[in-house]
Amino acid sequence: MKNPRPVKQMPLRAILFDIGDTLWHARSAPPPSEFRRLAAERAAAALAELGVTHDDPATVARAAWTAMEEAMRHARATDLVEPDYGAVSQAALEELGLNLTRDQAARLLEATYISGIEGGKSPFDDAREVLLDLRRRGFLLGAVTNRAFGGERFRADLRDAGLDIGWDVEAVSVEIGYLKPHPAIFEFAMKRLNVEPAQTLMVGNSLAEDVAGAQQLGIAAAWRESAPDADGVVPEYTFGSLRELLAIPALQRAC
Ligand SMILES: [Mg+2]
Image 1: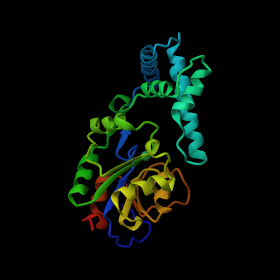
Image 2: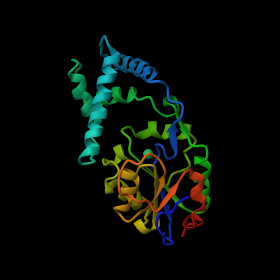
Image 3: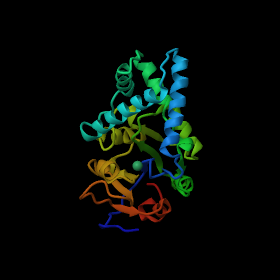
């Protein structure tokens, strides 16, 4: 583990974790053609359930999904406010001649989302054991994640991946309304945990979202080394596998 600058011993109480490419990753994702086939199948079922007909469910699925991705990209590049994906999907589907309510369009969009184990997500081998060890050491544990779908679906994906470790807080961007690195999502988590930035460590793989997002609030960050997505961001800790976190002096015991 490399510590690029001397770290002053911090009285840590809480550890916040990014999920994607930090705790799980797409190790065995189906090929894009299989994603498209499944999405078309789900879109057809969702349309039938809504009592709506369209002769090309694959196009319906693609239109909703593309619009969602574009809205997300735009938000990430601008104000970090989570778009209303139901409304985005509704507008895209209207262009295909489908007149759905916002909620119907949201349901259709979510139906085409191939997630979790089915989407090829696997937890890193040491993820569960490291989380449980940190819990035994007395730390409050939070998930702080950017995702367009939250709710029970996300919780079920966590369960299936063995990452349902009894989180003390789950801060999901689409539920809170802001994407990392917006301060609001970190502040939400800390408020729920009743901790200050100096008592908190953020763990993630994105320099731009996790490390810089945390540091702007005075939260220290541990970066899972990966292709850098920002320049000039220097994490307090850098690690290769989650297990290395257990050796950090400040993480031996919660204050
Ligand atoms: Mg990530």
